[in-house]
Length: 373
Image (cartoon, rainbow, N blue to C red; front, side, top):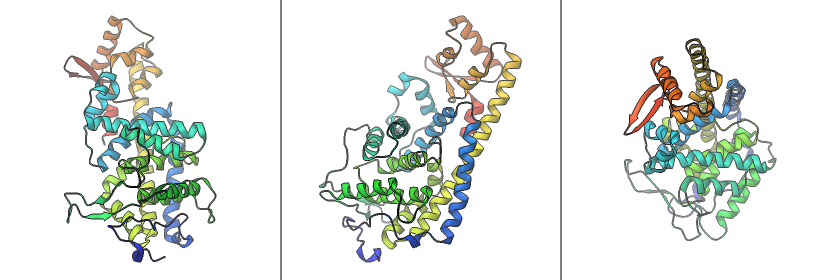
């Protein structure tokens, strides 16, 4: 199909071709990049087992992913705001709207992760649950009459111009989503590898644009859930949004090129590069965290009789720690003892105090340095 003849950016793209796409889109160049991406992703999955508790990394990486995914949609907050919020339920309740959006993004990832572990599949119910968590809304799929269009950003040339109008009409979104989930769950005629199917389905989801808002963030969470569901990752820790932010113009250009010209090759190579570089980055992050944890454990045990593996792991669950979090591991030590321990950790440079009004947070600067690199 010559997609250029049927595409009109100001009319609903109801002619969006269903999946699977033509077999010939996966050529030698695409397969070469797929090979690199697959190898790097497999190394990341293996490296996850080096962590004493892999969920530690999920808590930190999912937060970075959530923050970056929100920044792609021009929702900005500071690391300081986020770390304070996740270390203190009160701060989370009173956080800025941008910080709350980031935290909802992380919780949406976890909601989807729990859903696929419970049901063993990614379904429309999973998708809607993720979207509702991202946007903190009871809404579901957008209504047929909703006049959604995609416009250029206001910092771009010809700002405000319509660049794409997603499909619209009674039953059209539902039909396209049924096809998308059938493609994800079934063995397609070409036996496409799950990594390539992830890239293909990400374009398709963004082109369908099934929700009134939050499609980008929901779609990027869907990528991670699919990789976990297919056994390519044991946990959703691929930091894809970092790559997309650093190559944002190319991301939107490649999406548009599929719609306007059927250029699947450029899109697939872009996504394979995203997986390849992101896997390498996350691998180095794991190495740095594990090495620092081991060094801190050795140092702490040599200086303090009470310091142990459980305490050390707690200090690496998140960059900002409140004494109460540590006290859960210390089996409810007295206030005097806890104060003494926090003073020792500060004097030894393992933590540093940070005041925020009447509150005091303790920062693991070594972990913060690694995450902000």
